[in-house]
Image (cartoon, rainbow, N blue to C red):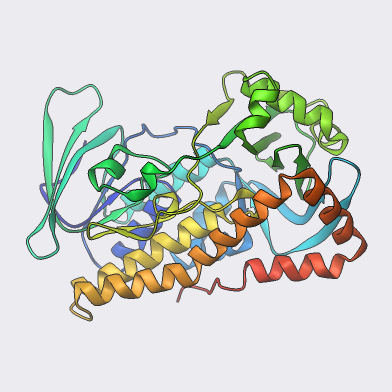
Length: 387
């Protein structure tokens, strides 16, 4: 652990949201401590698709060249397949890239360190106390260590992801809500290279497949719990059931082989009721709320949110706004843009999970592709470029 005793801002969580926040804060000259509880190169749950909007944000943060060096697979087209043969295809506005999350995260983490931020991985935040008026104190413990350390800072950006013990520390209301959503991620070797990101419906959910670097492919599944139970309760059995249900998915996977030990499953995915602030902590990425994956905007919203939270915090630190004004400004921006996308995405996901609704919808969109293109554009209408 290489953290100082003091920093202007502590950023907790080193995924895209946390790294975007750290990069934006360093760009404005503030000292940053970036803390992540996972070791570097951890495989996280993610569909591993970067939209054109994501690439634009990364470029605005000054790391576009580093991301380009990773390669990845250029994605130009989108296809949505029903389980009964319906199909909608279109060109992607701004394109996109299939890129493994491990490569993305490790590169962003390195860029943050190179820009002068203090960083610590495999480090758990055990307590978070304080206020903007008096400053915050964060107690941490490095994995494998018997001793804790303390960091004092003026502001905190929370980007720790879907669930964290810190949510309970901050007494966040969403913890009391039950969720029946589960996710499964499978990484494949020897996948057929394609510039197409494909989405597939099945009973009780939908999934996406994208080609990534080094001949790989990633399947990310979002499903209601009953779909897992009907498949026997095992994540791999659910994937096998989905492949049997959707012939287009079986064709896309082809002879690709699942990577041993690379299947990941998560449960109790909280889809609504989070929000961009908690106990004077600015929240971004999945900490603020998840975006349903079929839009391909998970990483995009994380990057936008992290950068916007950083700009609001920097405005306060530099005296441009009071803390209350900065918090209100960020909350209003988040709810009007990212929150709107999240609400819409989860409502649409729930409808697509119902065969009597999802299947006819795909067939209708296939007959009237202009309608599908319009829905796609509207899903991104509230995103604006970061200056």
